[in-house]
Length: 447
Ligand code: IFM
Figure 1: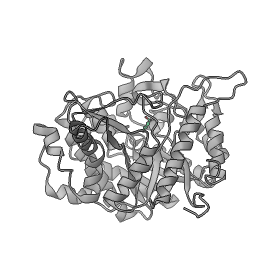
Figure 2: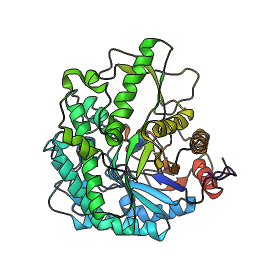
Figure 3: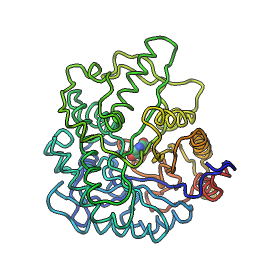
């Protein structure tokens, strides 16, 4: 942080998206189906029957979208690769046309002076691999490392930054325990296995990168600081469990080489025994940590909740977003300080932060989204507070560049700072986009 309260000149200011949420044309040019293609085409699983078939048509409009990024003045863009565009069968045969799309995208970003941050896995597992057990099959660590190596060989000379996984906790909790997300399982016993194989896959990809790559690689986790809903001992214990389940389950193996001590009793008879050597494979040095932050967990003991036996309660005095997440900027400062405290000082990027709000249309076609402006202002300030207290924060990415496919909620929730008319694909900068542009231009002076 500079002495004049401004963000450093080399700070990365970005926006983020993910393949299935924005690209559209999921089967184009020889791509194979992903589990999200399959899931969204299964009646009743996604709100209003929405699918990612068209989404923001970014697959065809990426050049215009890069031009919009230039207009915003961002110097970084986080996006993900659709694994099944590259390996239509999940493994084996490589689809060159899939690689070409991402080569064109990265070249376009580079030409615009925008640093690419590429996520290798943002939830759209090839359906062919799910047929072989997906994240429950131990071989997936090798399948993922092979896919990652193909991407490193194809793109690393263009100097992107790499993230292995996006939000492994959401993949396991939503995809294997409660089921609202693909592949839609509801199985307590599967959950720790899927989590463990995600971590093994992460470790295998990082190890592969050290052999062929020259730049930086990390992982993206969603962290939610937990606070007790009351001073009762029950609620304070619930906080410890919820934190172990959601936050430490993923970071402890990566940084400390072991699971939090609470996990075996939380999972009970569903807790498997893992080979010791797995932890050496998982604990690879990473170059940065990506943190996605949206809200906190105000936590109450709840016996009915599986695993963590804790639930999130509403704060009657707080503002909430359209996805029912409490607006709590202080939590961002707190969680960044917690990471430094527990895992040491390491480079951190806020790889997602943003909010879904209802953006009412105006007569003159402008889109005023004062709640999102307020949310972004307060959270970027909170990030600055953490930096001023010694956190090595290197960048901030708004979720999202565009309104897009919000998974099981389809197109009903809009997170973009750029509005998308899904009938015409017209993009309109919302007030929050203009605000973000000012923040970037003034290096935080406009906050
Ligand atoms: O849209 C998602 C994204 O894919 C992962 N992080 C949270 C966002 C908002 O729910």
